[in-house]
Image (cartoon, rainbow, N blue to C red; front, side):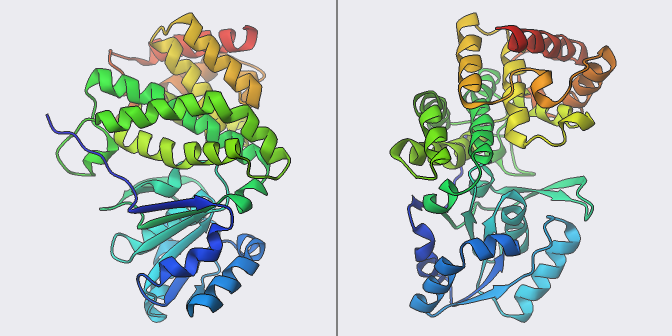
Length: 367
């Protein structure tokens, strides 16, 4: 049986970590294309100026437009080529990070510097492409993961709390989806796009388990620390959980129903103002109902979600009027060809997902 595990080459996390960015740029050269929104650049200008001066490097500005689109990637590749950049840096949220991966495209080294801990995108070997207008376009896959992931927890602690909580919602699904994939001997992303199928490793399952355990132990404490704008020990643990444990867990452990339901929920306009991890959190509850998990396990997940402020029912996602037509639309999209829901260790259909969503909505809205 073929197994696969992938990860970034280097992961560094801590207070003031951005002051060391130039040290890692120097591993590859002295000129870096900085892909970041101007607001994010302004927030960390002190750190960028200090590390550039100390290490004798140049940051080439990109005027990143905000969307990870084919057009923006092509433009930035041209900028990097004309400036003869040695490395590409993605600084900010998910779209800047994914754009940097696409511009580097496994040809140039890429350094990822998240300024929020809202998703596990920083460590992954894939990206999501959008149209210039912001509609979903396609997925992009790369030969390798980022060369360096540099996480400055002082910067992340200053971000709005909702980003950290959303990251916990994304991380919440990691263990349950990896468990389902393990039971189904399902293909994992670590197999590589277009390569022979491979299943997850025991290492990935152990990391996914630790991901869930750390959320339960430190999630609420980390949220309170973020409200105080300080990177406490619990906050550090949750940042690592949201970015590293969840990232390694999903790529090498696998995705299943929770993320498929997230994708299904996007067909409802009411959910568009909610973050990825917020929809994944409810998708995790649907996942557990779909597999008829133990009541105690569902209660544990619901208690956690409520403690940190994650959605537990459709109303929490802005869907105040739940109709059969809406829920079936979500269920059908969740079961689209190629969706990760088919990694569940039993047959699924739009009808079974429809029932699970309605049941999860009732359970999450009442318990």
